[in-house]
Image (cartoon, rainbow, N blue to C red; front, side):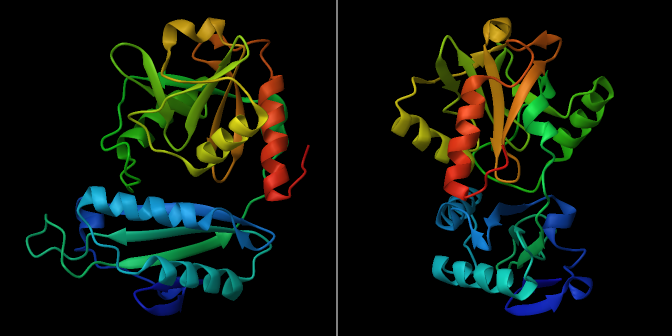
Length: 277
């Protein structure tokens, strides 16, 4: 596998960063992630824009112009020649002069991996998630620091859940660790608007919702409402739309993927030219 690191294409076994990089020492780095469909990166411009926004909010300057980032990513897709590709591009804080503050010379790399075929069971049966009082730091920035979330997910996996939903002290649900969260109540689609990472798949879903004339309410869903939800699902770039059929001990709707979830899955796949269901 070929990857790009600081102006050079290398085999993945040859790539390295310094152990003094504050991505290693302090967890200070930003990234973005996307995938291809039929060799074409999906919403590449949106992902690059979000990467630039993360850099701005973190006080970092992207090492490459947007046009250069697009060229590097497209070149890497061709070099690796996977049927479909997962792409992660990362900028670290570099080797800090004091071991704490970002360096002037920062490290940038792009990692390419073979895109996985997702089991149809995920969409046909749905998943369980658990709420957690853990709140993300800097939620509007896509950082590499997932330490607290990983600890929490290890706990909930013992209950059969696959992810957590971040909730505040009032029980408002924000998002999952790597996904945005949606609920359906009385025919209306509901999702948080503030305090979350604005997902690119979320953006596409909102575009579909507007086009199809689906009622939308931008607000938090509270834990007290879970029993009244007809449907729920999470969205991200790798798994698209994943129905959620149980949250904590609460069964959502009829306990299986609902009509709106299935409709949105099909509409999204019209855009990605994939028809798996």
